[in-house]
Length: 204
Image (cartoon, rainbow, N blue to C red; front, side):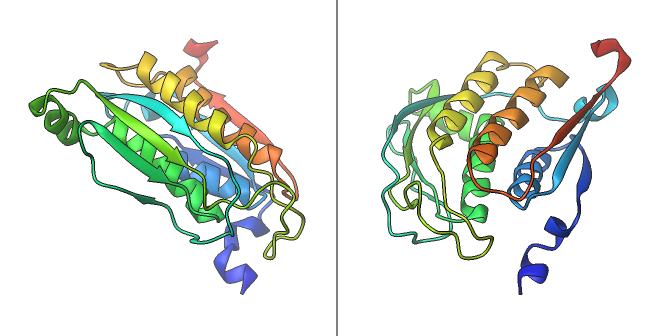
């Protein structure tokens, strides 16, 4: 069962072209499985990303003290320019929440909806109440959980995206978003962790 659900975790190294938004979530998923993550951030790949259009504001986070359920992440309805992002207590839950924040910042339809209702940004409450606290046992991979860097990850990703609003992510900015997730993963208990970032020579 472990190999089927975590197939990529069998590999020591991986490489991913950062050419679409889903690439970010994939890298975090791979890192949480213990695979070394290679990110190709060359100019021709980064140029395929859409522009950041929406400002996100992390207005609150709560403590990780949940029972470990549910395992999936979910979002409430956007009301008065505000939404709650509930982080599920699983690898998939963490990745989905990270990916959702990135997707929101690039969502032009959501931006139009907010502007039509008199809002210029999306206010986000990060709900960590379902995430088990640090020191809780992990059944699938063994060891114990450590979600201590989750709040910082969301705030860092939001900060980088906001600084890029109106433009596409540069290779450096994309790298910072990837590394925010990597710092969160490394704080936990994984079999190994390593990352390689491949840039164009013009980024030197």
